[in-house]
Each structure stands twice: as C-alpha cells, then as structure tokens.
Length: 472
Image 1 (cartoon, rainbow, N blue to C red):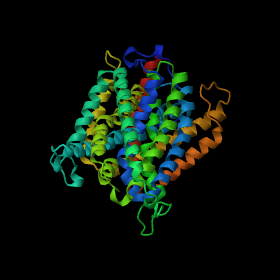
Image 2 (cartoon, rainbow, N blue to C red):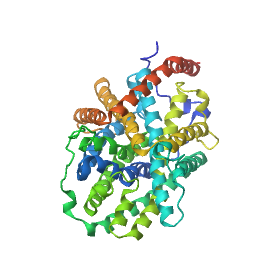
Image 3 (cartoon, rainbow, N blue to C red):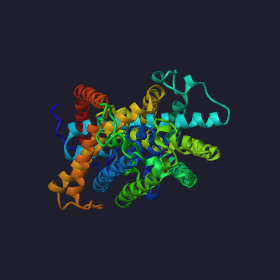
Image 4 (cartoon, rainbow, N blue to C red):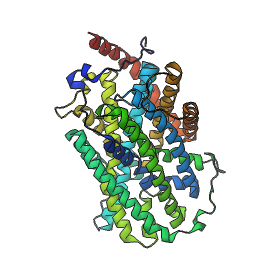
C-alpha cells in the first residue's frame, strides 16, 4: 500500500514496448459511430419498459435528467481525453491526477461497468432475437433464453452474441469499426420507422397521470420507484460516450477527433431518445409495455402494426450488437491498460500481429458470457450504473483538479463554465447513485471491498515491478 499515491506518467507511443502498442486506425466518423452505436440501443430498445414501470409517462423526464447529467460528464471527458490521449479513460485520468489507489478503485468500477453493460445488452438482444424468431414460427425453448432466476437454464442467445462480437474484435479494430458504422445506420433507420409509424396513434391521454409515482426514488408504498429511480436505471442508456475515450490510443488525430466524437455523439443521441420516448408513451399506455424486454416492438404490435414490429425486431437483432461491440471494445482496453500498468497480470497486455489485444478479449468474453447467461436484465443494468457513476464523478473531479493545478496547461478541447459543469456532473451523478436500489449500492460496496483486497494482495506490488521494469 506504500504506492497508493504514486501518479502515472503518460508514456509516449514510441517509447512503449512493441507488444504493448495499439494500432492507430480510427478517425472521427468511427468515433461518432462508436458513440452512437453504444448510446442508442439498450436504453431505448430494452430499458424503456423498465423505466416506464418505475416512473410512468414521466419516464420522458427521467431520460431528460439522465441525459443532462451525462452531457455535463461528457464535456469533462472531452477535456481530459484531449489532455491525456491515452487508453484507459477514467482509470488513466485518475492515475495521472490522484494516484494509484484512486485509479484502482475507478478501474475496478469500470470493470464492473463494462462487463455488466455487455452482459445486459446481450440479455436485451436475446429478448428481441427470441421475439423475432417467434414471429417467424421458430421459437426457442424458454429454458434456453432465460437464466436460472427467471426459471430457465441459461440464456443461450446472449452467450452466442457475445462470442460473435468477441471474434470480430479479435479480427481487427478498424474492421470492427467499419461493421459498427454500417449497423448504426440500420439502427437509426429502424428507430425512424418506429417514430413514423407510432405518431399517427399518438394520444395525449396516455400521459395522464404524468407522474404517478412521484419524483423521488421512494413511492407511497416505500418501493423504489419515481422519476429519479427510473433515471438512475436508464442512465445506463446514455453513457456509451466513455467508450470513445478508451479509443484514444487508436485514434489517428486524438487532439481533434476525441472531442468531436464524445460531444457530437451525445448531442445526436439525446435528440433521438426524446423523439422515440415521446412517440412510445403517446402511442400506448405505459402499463401495457412496462418491464417488457422488447417494448418498442410490443407497442407496434399492440397498435396493429405487426409488419413494423417485425422490421424493428429484425433491425434490433441485426444492429443492437453495436452496443455490445462498443462496450466490449472499451472493456478490453480498460483491462489492457491496467495490465500494462501492472495492476493486472502483465501477460494479458499483449497485442497480436494485427494490433488487437487477443488475450484480454477472450478473457473478457468468458466473464461477460457467464453473467449474461445467468442474471436478469434489471439487476445487471442497475449494478452497471453504480460503476459508471463512480467513474463519471472521478472524471469531473479530475477536470476540476487540473483546472486548479495546471490552469495554463494546453487543452485541445475546453469545457465551457468548467466549475459549473464539473460540480453539476459530480452532484448529479451522486444523486443518481443514491437513487439506485439499496441492494445495488450494497453489492457495489461489496465489489469494492473485494477490489481493495485484490489491490492489497496483488495490484500494488506488481504495479511497482512494472514501473521498475519500464525505468530499467
């Protein structure tokens, strides 16, 4: 523990060992597609029903609140990413600004975030895939599309899609990004189709009562419902932009492209979410699609448009893996950077001849496949949010610390009103964390206690050896 406050020095690419260098193959269109692919998908395609069950029609307000807090966090990310264009995202920034122990806690939280996001999206994709197959008359046995907690044996489609995405990432980063960009276009066209078909059925009466469970997380019965409870869950839908920050080392022109990718993808996605959520609530009373794993397709079927539901289901099956790809990519880079720093086994921090971290990708695939095959969507999403909120708070705090410590340092992207943006991001994320279910907060605490134990047993000493090896 003697190294808990040691800060990381950013190593230039040319000074890294060859086996630790990631290939620079991405440009800003790839980054925007990565961000949109990560952000637009899970929340609007699978968590709309979960959020509506907690907030009613006011789920639209939940989307707006979560999006605003994420927008402020995204500005902080953009500034830090262009100051330190290195892989690792919030973990790297925390290491540079606050030291090894804080970096470990943030990195450990990011492991939780990315692993569970990939798992949750795989579960959501499985719901759409099962619905689509059923519409074609080829339904899978229930026990093979649900985990044990839902009465099944294993969620086989979720495991399949994780394996497929892992194979694509192992094949190559640029190739994965190109496939991702094509699938993002398919997904946006499908959402546009939903809005066009649903709007003629818009009924303002579906918004009454607008806020049946109130604003705070605890409703009249003491259950964890309300606008903020929903926002704390569907916050999951907005935070894909941090996957862009993990791509810093693989970006051709990080000074220009990172800011464009992070901020541009957030603005675009907030507009998309508001349009789709409004059309969904207006077309069908929320109680009829609350907690559905495929709410938009269900809405289309309920309003008598099965053809559109089939098209949307097909598009979701085809395009929802963009979310899995983006977060899987980010997770592998977080693992890779921590291993390169010695906080995880350094043998995992090796790249193939194609410049991709194969060992880390396979390791990540095994972990997330087990989670996706067993656990239900709502529990996964809530726990993933806890890790993300911790990372967002850390990045906003890093931005403010650097504003005070090095006010004249060159910044390729400058956050407007940094103290307002940073403080609102920190307080907003803290409030969303408080709004998470109590058991989620408890699980997160247990996770971090385990993490500190791992750091004490392994991480600190091995990180010191890695630093000594680089210095030699």
